[in-house]
Image (cartoon, rainbow, N blue to C red; front, side):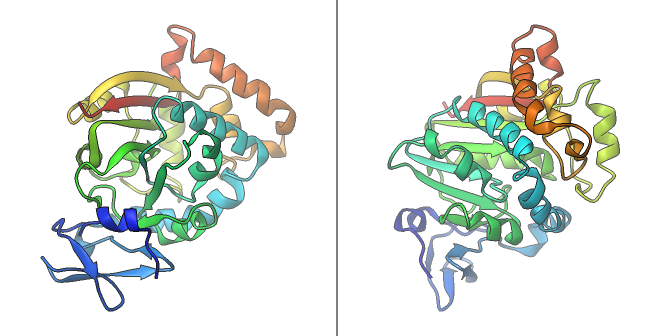
Length: 297
């Protein structure tokens, strides 16, 4: 069992935030006498079961292979998600200590590798053990935990990325509050989440009835997300993404348009069309995704 020393120093009990000591088979909290196992070098700091969103846990375990085999592997889908992730990452600093909250299968660690400053300390956190099994193929500093009870000390991170995280949480405000707690003064957050518009509302209502989503899945209007983040951090920028390319390229695990259209040829033009639409006044606010940058001031 090996945990990076810098990570070991900032880990805390998710239930009482007490210091963790080495136990017989993992980590132990002296304050509440709770033990936490380490599975394959990944500390399991999920904490008390009565605080865990079991529906979302089951959903993410279920879709993990679909994400790995389709959403982030089909070339056109991978190119779409990589382009949006790079755009997101360029809004914040990627040096110092960086948390990918809700890291899923570890796509961030591959797609943004060239953007990360040398010497940066990166950690991924996710609720799903099956997602983390996949993430271990891409990065070796991972923690299992709940985004509404982050198992880290206060002011531990320079940057937090929350990509498609908050809309999955039963209590998004608790997630935003926890992110603010673990950010250092001057630390930056960038959120990419689902945007509710007249274009996206009906398709998402239909999609949410499927097995890819649990009952807590939601979409945010601009004011809802900026108010949610703004209660805890200072919002500095709001951008939008995802227009034509979003439904056609991004989600082959839901609908694979590659069966009907030459997506290898269409991917780059569609991505560029989306990037252009994001700069057109009026039209830009119809994006399927919304990106918010905030700072702990």
